[in-house]
Image 1 (tube, rainbow, N blue to C red):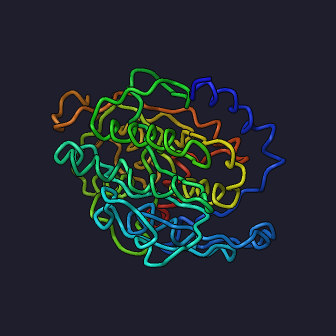
Image 2: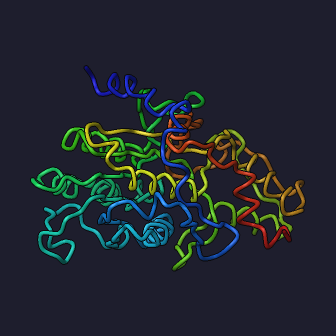
Image 3: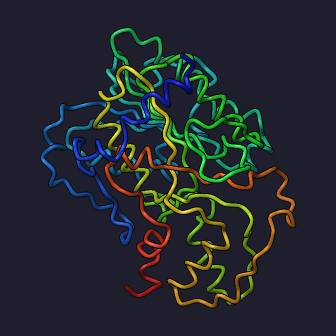
Length: 349
């Protein structure tokens, strides 16, 4: 049986009908605050056996939120490693990479990546060395007495972008180097470590400012708000579509996979991880404009074909994320709700 057939045969395992049998919604970030607040009222969280989690890419945008979330769970011992510039996946990995000998690792969360398509195009060799973590996967695969769950962040850029609402079983055919490196990483993981892995194909991650240290790139919601608040007309593409996903939803998924690692003991799994709506950047700008009481007429809808970004971009990589919603037992957060929470100070709520 081929890997994609195995995935289809297991898809029903995470259907909505099973949601009530699974652990309830785990942790949720309070997006109205700079520092995250977590709810530990669930006894299920506090009675889980202690497990050690290695977090790679802890200094990146998503990594900072994951660091705060997992670090606040009493049953988790968290080991943080830095961002993509601090990690060298080209060399053989061993326990010395962690600064400890014979450490038992129960879960590895890999958030490290060169995630901007433009950067990948400018330095394709570095992008491949970071985004295809061969040394890490080989280190995990050769551990004899300790086989951790690997949670690996992939991307919606693995899809070609010629249709709407891709499913996990659809063919991957990336149009740029960033997507190609992520496809290569997925295939590497399935080949060398076929069991005990979770691949999360994330869309654009939206949320508040990074909670620990600023990141050196513009964040989508804040960029839209600042551009429109300036009073100057701003162009937004209206013919490229994504499913932007809230950072707190991504963190909840990673946390749930970590606490339920045993469910992936005998098989790897791939999930689309995008919000519930198919939106262009112009659509997103209009939502932010309405929420913040800004002037909609400043939004100039333009075609992506009018701008040379130096790298090819897929047209429509919206995704069907119903499978991960079945796993969580709830709907993912809408773009409007995420924006409302993140921009609450501007909105005055």
